[in-house]
Image 1: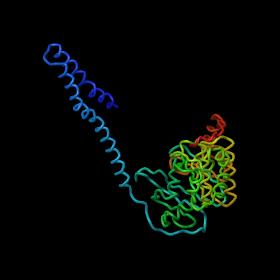
Image 2: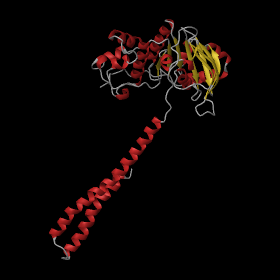
Image 3: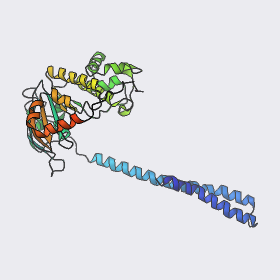
Image 4: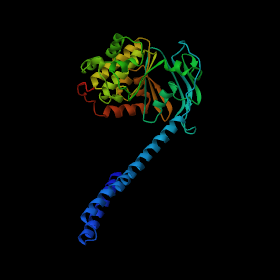
Length: 346
């Protein structure tokens, strides 16, 4: 923040001093005007290198920070390699007294058990920090659990290769990332060999086809890095289309409806119902009430533990904490319809 003022002082002050001192000496006839002009010209060769010093210092600090970040990335442990390819027998997912800690001391997850079956929708609810997102990271192999067991189609997760694990999940993150490419290519990333018809079918099922066709070049429209040229709801629908195109047996959605208006949200839930009817397992981290009402089972998390599980009606009647969360969300202001998508992609 001090670079610009320091640069200004180093650039201006020498000339001001030279003009003041040289002008005085010229008036006193101690030097001629020609000598003053020559001196002003020559001092420029001293000032310019001095002005570069603050920029060099700033550049050094930026480079040092970048080097620290590169070193941090290089020191990250490599993901494990090898493992079995897996089967499709048994329940899609079984968690048996799972424990996990980021620092090896305090548990982010403790004694979590749950069975997820095919053809059902599961909602995971809980306050921030209750372990919902951590659970998703364990399921996709980003971290290894410390104790207990996670079984994917009857096989221990740690015995499977990461490729086998991740091939069985279609993930829609809360903040989806889009690459600086066409919308069609962003969807096709999930399955590079997909045909244009398959891409469009996935977009229709994700309620994305209509707004995509309103963009200047349709599916060929280029998006900016990260998808900043699209609205949050548009990015989420493209991410959902990407997940549908992959067509994995298990869908993980992290707050997938957080940027959707009421109409789009209802269409999303219809798409999820269709996925479950087709035999897929749908697991959603949910803050919206509607998904809890339509889910076959709601899993309530608190401080890293599974506090309760059951249907929405059962939990309302039997679990005071869930009823309290439900009441708080019902009391919140109703969701305003979002403005129509205007196709802001460049």
